[in-house]
Image (cartoon, rainbow, N blue to C red; front, side, top):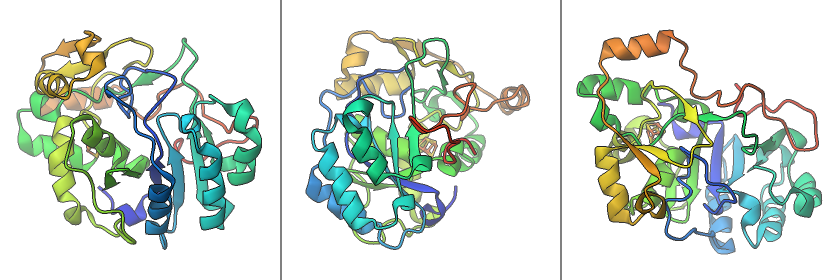
Length: 291
Ligand code: SF4
């Protein structure tokens, strides 16, 4: 784990609504009874809380352009974050035509991340709903894997309407399982070392499979892979996707030997497509998720 203040991006999750419903979505789209839309005051508070954060401030969803106040959010960002190169947007291209002009005014072309999930021939995701705690009996091994989680190394921390989180998947999990929320959205909440966000790691990482080497699965399946303890949590949370039966229950254990084999076979869960994402309408290589 790296300190939050060293991470390359902290996202402001303005909504978890999306036009798509991918398998193993990092925001668990399809499992929420109702999506959230962060209000402008909270967005302003979130931006203000990042005062002094030296790296990128990401606007993220769900699909952020679905937020009914997306234009106002862009204007707020322009006002509160003077450096255009510090602002970034993750979009799957939905509403691109509608918002192209304001998106280009607000975000540097290198920081418009085209997260296109529509090509049915490509796209594989690491399963996220197979609890590490269910599949790894050796807990020392489990924590060693979690300590090296690629999501936290490569991706982002997050602010949701429920607070600040050291990891974007942990933030989504908090929503999914009706967790207690994150750190209060106050200036400098992100100024934390791993030992200072251990409370969140203990709460979320054990229910997550991001850090556990396993096969990537098609993002286009209509179902998610779910382990026993997660199935119980989804049922309790009233997940619509779960209640419709759109899940596959898995029950397996991994030893250190199994894990070494999977890693040696070339486990690269971050490369979920065989091409690099590039900014919409701009043929430049992006830098954030392709490191
Ligand atoms: S194990 Fe899951 S919750 Fe923990 S850091 Fe990795 S992605 Fe985030």
